[in-house]
Each structure stands twice: as structure tokens, then as C-alpha cells.
Length: 180
Image: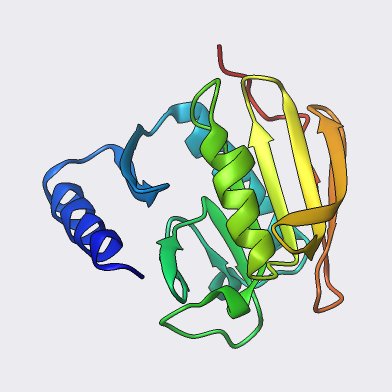
């Protein structure tokens, strides 16, 4: 991580300690403050509930917890499904799947910056849930800065995540709420 990235993270951590109700990240050399919404919160909870119903232990599910990427800014996925036995400090190597819920209508951070970083570090599955479009994008088989497989699901369909540890997570989207 560059000195500038380190300074940005220190600033972001200071702001996070003072301001409630926002997810604060450093993305693309900028401090990004995203207000938390009820739709986002409900969606995150439903994904975690689906993972637990599929047999994933609570200890393997994180929400907004720091994941380290050497030489690059860390990420705090909305939901991360970890390898069994993963322990702090968490790194990209512990992540079987990352899930992000899009926060704004034109959010290039989730669709571009995070896709490239997660793919570059080999995160096996990345699910982007977009309450503005009522769609989900499941990315798998990372290759370079992209994913070789892209599957789109409309709200109402069930998404099946086939994790690298041979477990399967079924995420029904019929109760996901849309956002204007």
C-alpha cells in the first residue's frame, strides 16, 4: 500500500470513529462515504440467513469486516464467506465469496474497481446485488483482472453459489427489496 493510501485509510478510520450511519472505504484513491439504507441492511441479512440455512457456520460469515489485500487498499465486503478456520487478520486468501450490495444507481466502484481487485487476487466468487436494477451479477472463475464466468439473475430467482470448499449456498432473491 502506498503512503497516500495509508494516509487515506488513517483519515477514513478517523472519520468512521466520528460519524455513524455510513460505510466508509477508500476506493480508487478516494474516501467514499455511503449512507446505510434499510434495503441494503435487509439484503445483507437475507444473504447471511441464506448462507446459514445452507450450512455455513456463523463464524464464517462477516459483514463490513476488513479483508487485507497486500499492496492494495483493504476491502470490507457487505458479506464475506470465509474458509473454515479463517482467523484475524483476514486476507483475500480466506475469502470463498464476496457479496456487495450496490449503494447508488451508478456505482462503478462495485462493478469495476472491486471486480478488478477481487479477480486479481483470485477471490473465487463475487456476487453483486443491485436493488436499483432488481438484478444480481454472479462472477466466478477469476482470470487476471476479470472473471471468466458472468451470470445475471433477476430478483425472484434463486442464486446458487458453488464455493471452492465444495459447499453450496442457495440465495433466494424473491424477498429482496428494490430501491428507487
